[in-house]
Length: 334
Ligand SMILES: [Zn+2]
Image 1 (cartoon, rainbow, N blue to C red):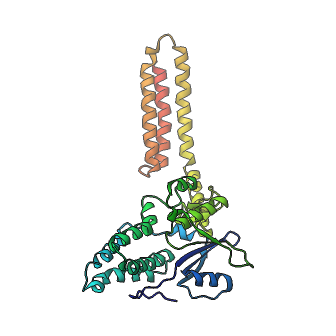
Image 2 (cartoon, helix red, strand yellow; image 1 turned 45 degrees about the vertical axis):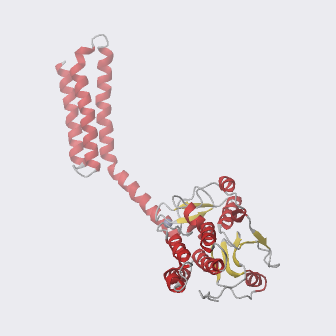
Image 3 (tube, helix red, strand yellow; image 1 turned 135 degrees about the vertical axis):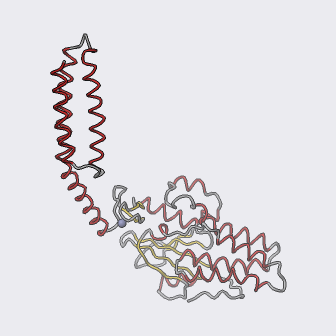
């Protein structure tokens, strides 16, 4: 069934229902008149606006933000239209078009918010202080869009989220068990989506499931452990290839790293012996100490240059070998 954004008010309660299936790792979302949603869940009938089954976690991962304040801007237009006695529908038309575009995106959260907004708009019109009432209702409805602007919806620990939400409208939820066969629990709200978010996060927490960011493709995905950092077989293959490439690179670099270490050890052992021999007269080996410092600084510098492909590893190894002659000569001159 398609929702018509008409000027006729409808008096049913609009429900957003969520069934989470831990076994199949699926979420099932229904939007529609409360009675129709119940029928659909219990017997498979019932005319609803949305009946969507998809992988567990998608609702939270894809929960829309409203960075451009599109929703609140629309609500402003709707509020102002109440004052336009003779051109009300014309004035509200751009907001209505926008709601219809959101509805057409086939995203359950956007669909639900679009329908609820329009229904509130029609409902408040016939009440006193209609603009204030609509503002209050849309604020409540849109709050989850703004609360998570700066962070991800699952970033806040469930216990902290519980303590932050105090409004009854944002914390109460209905639980249904409509299907005797599947015995799946269904969570249902008829206004704010905040309790649905809370319920969802609580269930994931209970089931020890986590939303993780894939370190290859950057996508968020549901994982059974915080240690999982890759979302799919494709990304696991990509990571394995990258690991191998890095290993090969290190293996390729081995000879010059080894040459560096052995040249360093060559210098260090000689200097250490001289320090011991000249413990009472360190000034005698001052020139050697200085040459050692220079060698250390220069070799690190050249090693970096090899890594950046600015000089060849062969050139670096040749230079390291020459440096052995430098210290040998200095010791001879001592
Ligand atoms: Zn990935």
